[in-house]
Image 1 (cartoon, helix red, strand yellow):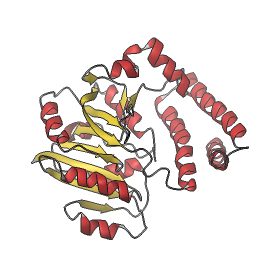
Image 2 (cartoon, rainbow, N blue to C red):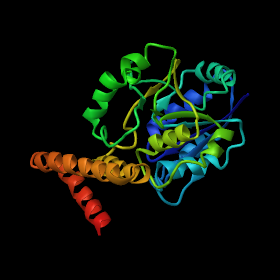
Image 3 (spheres, rainbow, N blue to C red):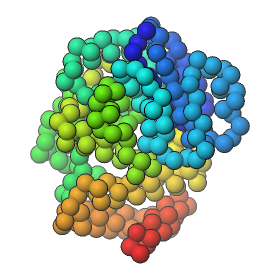
Image 4 (cartoon, one colour):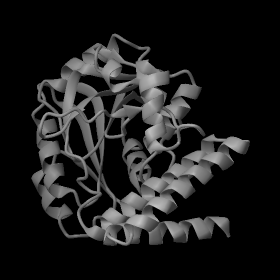
Length: 299
């Protein structure tokens, strides 16, 4: 049996969750514990799933406290050497986890571990990135940094070797020893959705913990399982990307860098959404939510 606890946070992602759980049940070696932390889906479907997947430990939250909240709730029930935080819209090949854990047990210097993620078309999802700073806080600037200044962080370089060393790894698949997770004192629930994985990697970096991408293993990641179900959810989650970027800046930046980064994010987002709102209901909804957040924070 794999000395592993898998923690999955779910919010109305039932069809993809079913595929994910079946893929875990089909691993060549059984997993010690699989925990699904349901963030108050409140749609009447959890009872059927608890019956269908009776081997899963279910945590039923009374609120939707966000991704970090759900991860921490599940992790509190873990009693294994290894923890795997996994998105419900992923599928794990049957021979993946046995070989992966055997390899990682032989490499104690690997602390936060991810693997290659591909979509249903076999295309690489690139589940990693460089840490935001005041000069690269906008996406296009980060791309320039990766491809010109820090070429070892480029997509080409990161995928050319069996082991890559990105600044941060995606929260869709995070493998970590329980001892290391305790050193990090859990996921930060200040982040409701998005940037919590960058924050976790940033805190790991500050403690000298190594983040790695292992390209010899992969999983399928069908993005947007919970974040694009309806227009309202799409608006909420896309606005949360910007809100979380401000939270990350507030937590990790200081002085003039913090002010500059906040200003760049606000300015570029406001201009873009103001123009596109004329043509898009979704963009209007995102702008409305962000204006509410910006004015509330300022006040």
